[in-house]
Each structure stands twice: as structure tokens, then as C-alpha cells.
Image 1 (cartoon, rainbow, N blue to C red):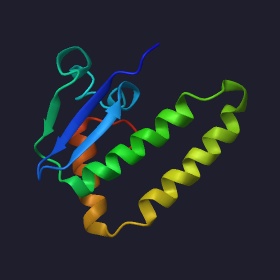
Image 2: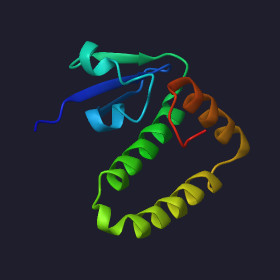
Image 3: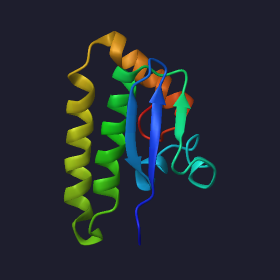
Length: 111
């Protein structure tokens, strides 16, 4: 199975190359799997700083969600701990922007 790569472009011009599994974390971005492979996909409402956090979140959830089901309880605990640490390291303004981006991109668990 080959990994299709996609380029997300933030509102301020930053580019993020991500694989298909990351794209599928977003209901908004999932349709681009058929439409935008190999091209840049503009994310006009999200800055590079916030899109970087979104990508980090999605990558972490792909790794855990795609892991071995026999260790799902410990993976779930580790994921919850990671989520808590991920959010608590941010200032309130960043959390707000991240929630707005998660809402726009429809990423379950991030808002």
C-alpha cells in the first residue's frame, strides 16, 4: 500500500506535507484524497502556527489509532495523557485559535 502525500498551505503561506492518514483525521479535508493528490490544498482560515499544531495532533492520533488493538487500553491512556499535555502547554489565545481550526476542519476530539 503506497502512501499518498498531500500539501496543506496555511493562510500565511506555510506548507505542510502530510500523508493520507493525517488528511483522513479531518472531515473537511477527507474529500481532497480524490481531488487534490499531488497539489497544494489551501487552508485559508488557519495560520501556519496553528496548522502546525493541527498536523502534530493528527499525526499523533494516526499513530495511536493505527496501532495494535491488543494494547488499546494502554494506548488510550497514553493518548489521553498526550492530549492533556498538548493543550496545557498552550496559552489561551492559541487554544482558542486551535479550537477554531479544529471546528473549521472538523477534527473529532480536537474540539
